[in-house]
Length: 547
Image (cartoon, rainbow, N blue to C red; front, side, top):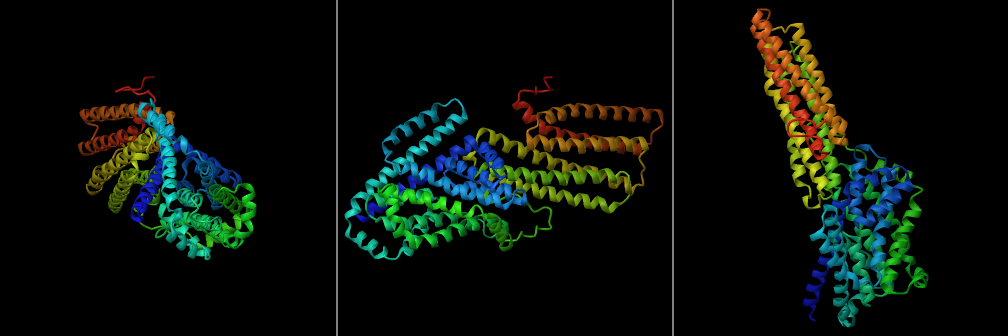
């Protein structure tokens, strides 16, 4: 086999390995995305629990980068302390070693069964979770198939004089081997893929045990570079966890590299098989990093806080704060980010509502312009949220996550419409009242205040429905919409009766009717937030609640 043919085979086989890892990652996220996020949320309370959560989640995801993104969603804005976040990364590093341990054994004979079984589950599965687990099984089968092919491709070149001469020239300088493996892991975006490739080289005898261990150290460093590089150019806070993870690994690498010759005899006592030797060293290295650094994490966190101080938030309220583009490939994290940004949007709309209520009591025309400008903030946030949601990796969305995406977008759309109603309708009515020196009767002002108060309360209920999927709040929203409609009818009827009896002034009567009409439109947009949850739970008919 020519050198060109070998290179082409290696590129294809490595690509197949990476695609298998990607299928496992996306399948697990589609099947268990929100559950994994819950596990991390519960785990981020103590260092030990955070470590174990990192081990568990990364073992099933087979990606410490994906785990890091989920941790970032909790640490953003200081919601979770840096110390447990670093503990999660120590656990994530150990988690990546477990799959390497499994794959270091000769289990390539089972890949046909995995691929066939995964295909049947994917094609015949009656639920989305069954199909997603089928995707995971196919991914595992492709990983084993790629390892088998890699071994077959590398085996014939074991006797290559040129390759042996090249590696013999590099072997005396372990730093070059470390850098070579680091570049490989960085380019593959996966320490698992890099380690499996190193193990294949070791098994074929292309590299000796000393060189394999040096390359294992490099693979650990290279996989730490990806999240660090992805966090550059933005808020320095994003660099705390990845820089801390890289620094801890780098220190242990520097201490371990000169000791490889001393460690080799002891590692051979455990298992002298070249692939197992590399896998065991990889596991022991990450266990050592965790054992050494888990206790001094408070001091490490203090140092990282000084090195990477929080960036001053932009004063422009229309600039998104939570739409982290690094999280787009992790749907559960990205959806959480979008939901938090929608809550900022809801807070802005609430400010506009309170301002519109005040303007029917006060005669400050300048506040009309200020509230209208606030609608520009709502519009900009809505545009940013819409673009962000459209950029999420939709292939990795489970059915539940797809529904959540739809709910978040629908709430953002309704908020944007509410902002437009306040800006283009209520503010125009407020300006008209001030310019024409109109005074609404006390009973009319009381009705308007009552409707505003209900809208503000209902907006909070809508936020609860979105964030916590609260069925009670959803039921109440729909019920309150009916009461709001009755209130609007009562006000309108009373207004018409006063107008017929001559007790009402025409201009103020028309003004009140227009205000009430627009407030009712706002209520309809708020209440619409509950429809998706109630329909999903089977409690909403086309026209009204079932109970």
